[in-house]
Image (cartoon, rainbow, N blue to C red; front, side):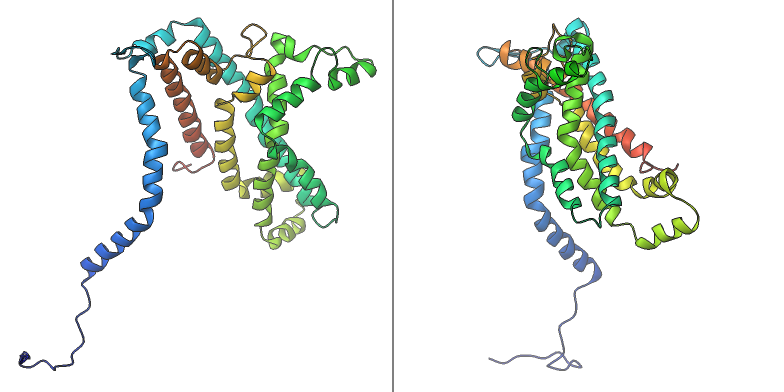
Length: 312
C-alpha cells in the first residue's frame, strides 16, 4: 500500500498539538472524572435527602396511611402551635449558652496547652482534655445524668458537703438547659481545642518575637495578634459548633427527656416526637426545614461576621 505525503511537509513531521480550546475541554473532563464520585455521593446522600425532606413537608404524610398534598399547611400548623414556639425558644437559649461556651472553653484550653507546649507533661494534659470528645452522646448523657442526680449525684453531694445549697439542676425549669449546655461544652470543647491548637502551631515564631519587642504580652497579645490570625479556624469551629447547637437531641433525650414539663424540649426532640411517636411525618419534616434554615442563617452570619462575606 502506498502512502501519500502532502507536498511541502516532511514525512516525519510531529503531530500538531491540540488547540487551547481542546486542552480546556480535556482538562474539564479530567476534573469532572475526579469530582464525579464525591459529587454523586453528595447528591445522593446530602442534597437528595434535604430536597426530599422539603417535599415531605408539603404533604400530610402518614407512613401507615395515605399521603395528601397540603401545601404550606404544615408550616401554618407550626406557626399556630405554642409547643413549637416553646421548642424554638429552648433551642435558641441552648445555642446561646452552648456555642459561646464550647468555643471559649476550646480556645482557652488551646491557649493553655500552647503556652506550655514545651513541657513534657503537656501531651498527657492535652489528651485528657480531648478524651471526652471520644465518648458517644449516650455515654455523655448517662454520665451527667448520674452526676447531677438529685439523690446520689456526685456534683450535688460535693456542693452540699461544702456548705452550698445547690439547685436540683435537671429537675428545675430554670436550670435544665444550662446544665445540658454545660455537659455539652465538656463533651465537645476538646475537639475545638485541637482546631485552635493546630491554627496556633501554624503561626510563625517571628510574629511572637515581634509582638514581644512591641510589648504585646498576655491579653494584649491574644486580642491584638492571635485572635485576628485565628479567624479561619474560628470560622470553621463556629460553623461546626453552630450545627451542633441547633441539632442537639441525644443529651436532652437522655438527661431530661425534654422536662421538667417541656422546659428543655428543643426542636430536634419536637421533630422526633411528631415524626416517630405521633407519625406526623409532614409536620416533622417542616420542623427539619426550620432547623436547616436556622443553621444556614448562622453559617452566613458567621462568614459575614468573620470577614469572609465581602467588603468590611
